[in-house]
Amino acid sequence: MPEAPEVLNIIKRTTLIVRDMTVSVRWYEHVLGMSVWLDTEYVLSGEGIAAGSPGDRTHLVIMRAEHDKIGMIGLLQWLEPPLPAPEITYTVGYGSPVFVVETEDAGELARRAEELGARIHTRERRFSVTGAGGQIRHLKGAALFDPDGHFFECNEVLRIEHPNNST
Image (cartoon, rainbow, N blue to C red):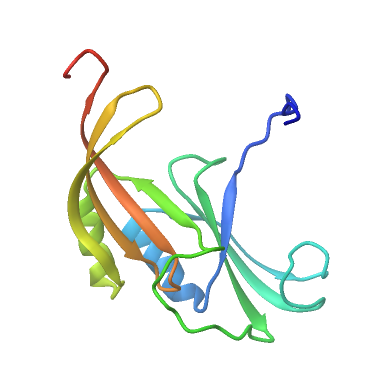
């Protein structure tokens, strides 16, 4: 296998295609505590994104989490012409992202999502995973879908056990 180049690449944002910008912005604000960082319309050139057609008018809102360079989510809605929306299947498969959110209160996050009518896959579960450094992370998690069927695994760290140490 060829050696990876020594170039800094940072994945700054994931942009999701949404059906209703108002509903989506409300969900990301209320459930994940994000705020609007950018709100603008674009006319597509046909070269930047492999969707739609040149001349399509879109609405882009970039939601900001705790950092202004990473952890951002773009929400993109087709205005003219509207992009036909497939049925939401509430499943995860090839081509479906899984977003992992670290939260201080997984139960409260799930409650807020449910307030807005979100599909809850798992309300609360406790589990442990072993990290790359051998630490065992004990977590409480909830799993849910946003209004467009994007899947979110939301985890609250209960405690971390370090190798050769139980704290």
